Image (cartoon, rainbow, N blue to C red; front, side, top):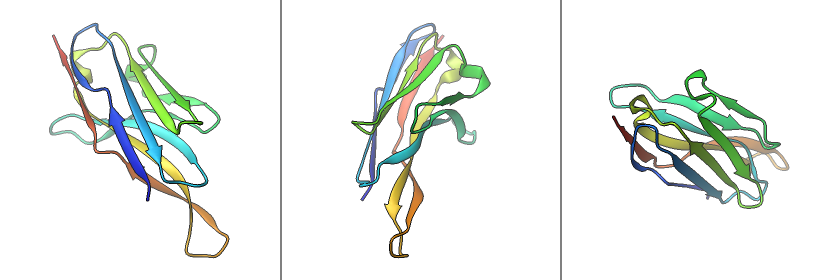
Length: 125
C-alpha cells in the first residue's frame, strides 16, 4: 500500500519562505515523477512543480526563480523550497507521486499515481 505524507505548510508573511516535504512509501520498485500541485478555494488544482526520477525539474511560470523542487531517492522524499512567497501562492498544496507497482499481469510493472492529503500554505500581505 502506497502512502504519501506531506508536511511543512503554515502561515507566513509575504516575502517569507516555507519548505514542504513529501515522503512516499510502499513501492518496491520506487517512484518515478514526484511533484507538487496546489488548489486555491474555488479554483481547480494546478501543477506547481515536478521532478523526474533522475532529477530533472519543471515549474509553472509563476513560481520560476522563487520555488525549488528537489528529491532524495534514498528516502523517497520530495521537497519544495518556496521563497519570496506572495499572497497569490495561498492554497492547499498536494503531493503527487507516480509509483511503480506490480500489475495484475504477471511480470508487468506499471505506473500508478497517488496523492497526499494536502498541506495548507497561507501567505499574508
